[in-house]
Image 1 (cartoon, helix red, strand yellow):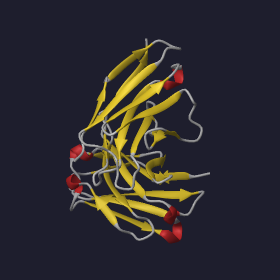
Image 2: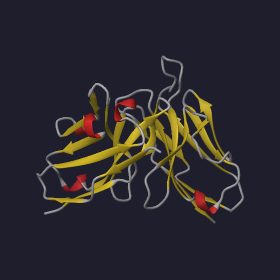
Image 3: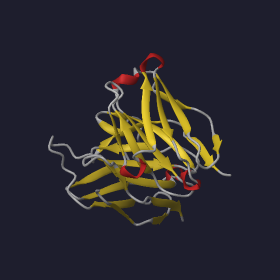
Image 4: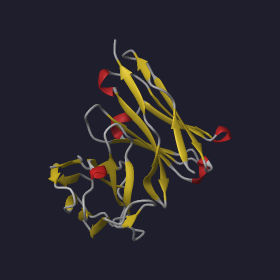
Length: 118
Length: 113
């Protein structure tokens, strides 16, 4: 069965970077695109960007341009999201979410809590 | 960017009664390929979102048939025919037609009266 297992919680200082991994199992990573979505405490869902896992092409939300990088390593069926220049309002749960049946959000990882605090 | 507006934002429902959530987009969600990429998600407290409905009206695997999606153009509805205790949480609509960016509604919190 399809599973997306994300890396563990992180605590970072302002200005630092964080890299979250999303290991896919039960299918080949390159079979479907991967979206990254975040959710600040008590808030709604915010789309960060998408990676075409076959070609590596990426599209990012304007609000993260220049700070976010999405990559993948097909040899280990894993996608990554790196966010730099962290600020306190980047404190959130970060999710990877795989497309399914040609539409976004079919399968989700368990989420990774990133806390930014001095 | 396409703005997604949900109503109501809070929905108290009696067990066994129906519930309905509306989602309106700021522009038509009909894609040039003929599909309408409007999805519905349910998020229980402390859990990841789960997709219930994709492309307006298609139920995902394992989703009970008491959930149904409908609509076209800019106006969409998620209906629950009989609300159960397991249905509490927040419901989000999402458009994937005009991206980037993909955009979500603000969320509708369903609670049991």
